[in-house]
Every structure is written in C-alpha cells, then in structure tokens.
Amino acid sequence: MRIPRIYHSGPLPATGTVALSEDAAHYLTRVLRMAEGQLLHLFDGSNHIFEAQITQAGKKNVVANILASRPANVESPLRLHLGQVMSRGEKMEFTIQKSIELGVNVITPLFSERCGIKLDGERLGKKIQQWQKIAISACEQCGRNSLPLVRDAMPLEAWCAEQDDGLKLNLHPRAPHSINTLPLPVNNVRLLIGPEGGLTAEEITMTSRRGFTEIQLGPRVLRTETTALTAITALQVRFGDLG
Image 1: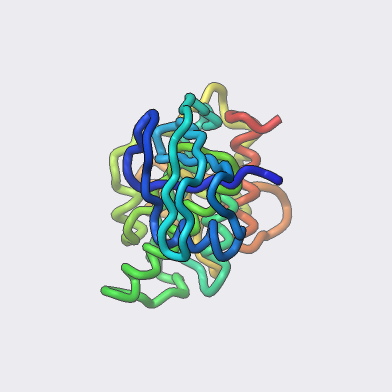
Image 2: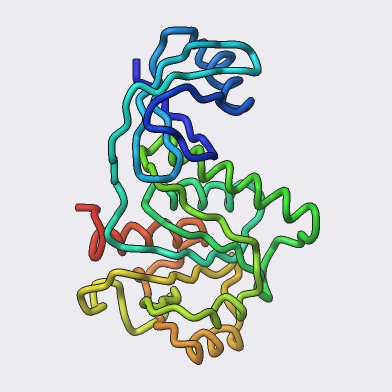
C-alpha cells in the first residue's frame, strides 16, 4: 500500500508528536481506514517530507509521531504564475488541480469582460477557500512539498499591471510566435489564459501595452481549460523539468 501524504498547515517539528486537522483525521480513519501504528508522510510547505506513525486514531482526532524528516524538493526550475480568467462549474477546479500537478507556483483567478463567473463577497471567498483545498489535495497526490498559492480574485487589468520581471505571455490563436520560438533561458513566466469567449480587442490591446507577448499553441482553437494545461506543459518541456 502506498504511504498516504497529508498536508499540515503549521510548521512541523523535526521529531515529536503532532495533532492533525479534523479533515485529515476524517480522511485517514474514515476513508483510508488507517489505525494506530500505521505510517504516513506529512508535509508543511517547507520542501521537506516528515515520516510519521499514527499513535492515536479517532474519527475526529489523529495524533502522529514524527520519526524523521528530510529535504524533498521536486519543484520545477521554471516559476509559473497562472492568471486564469474564471470559468464555470468544474472547469476552474479542473484547471487548478491539473496546473498544480504540472508545477504552477501561483494561481490568480481573474475577472474579465467575458468572464462567466458572477461572484462577490462571501460567496467568492468561499470559492477561493475551496480552490486552495483543491491545490492542497493536488500536492498530496502528485508529491509536491511546497504549497502553491491560490490568490484572491482580481480584475484582469490590475493583474496585468503588477510588477513582474518574468516573461509575460498571452495565448492568442493568431499570434505570430509559439512557445518553441521563445528565446532561452526563461526562469519566470506570467501566463495569462482568457475566458471561454476570449479576451476582447480592448483587453488584448491592454495586455500588449503591459508588456505581454502573444503566443499561439497551434492551428486549432482550444477550450480555456485545455489551453491552460497545454501551455503549461509546453512551457515545462521547453524551460522546466518535463522531458
């Protein structure tokens, strides 16, 4: 059986006992049916793995004893910040989950003219919390030990105006450049993915004014969630750690 990986929100000690969250306790005891004496791996976002053993196992409370810790860096050398105009339903969740697996470091949900999501206030806050949980779950599954950040949602132009010394890219089906034509080396990318209906002409002009380079992925028009994952994969193959 594969040893389960569990994220712990606070700093973990090199050795000693730690009480896990109620969500983690439910998953370990009710879903995986784990009991005292079984082993698990913990991580706290510090790029370390903590080998631990369950010492107490209840429905809402699990205590684990940390046996050892070691550095475990599986991060890509390419730092990726994804600016994703929010999509409807499960599409946004899918994009967040898979982009984390592919190595994205930061995700900023964006509002644009053609954004299909109309959320604000408390509803939007709950959605951000849900997306951060999806990011944690993706790290638990894929083996990342540094937790990516899902930022608060913001307007497209405000995100484009943020200071960033990385390469700024905007996907456009009729752009003159492709990822393969970008010059080496690239260590930091801010990648913009538009909504299902695409960016407006005014928004495209704005991104160009803010220093974004337009690139295309091929002759076919892709859905927004397909575009994000295809672009991230291509960038990781050219500049990151996918072979």
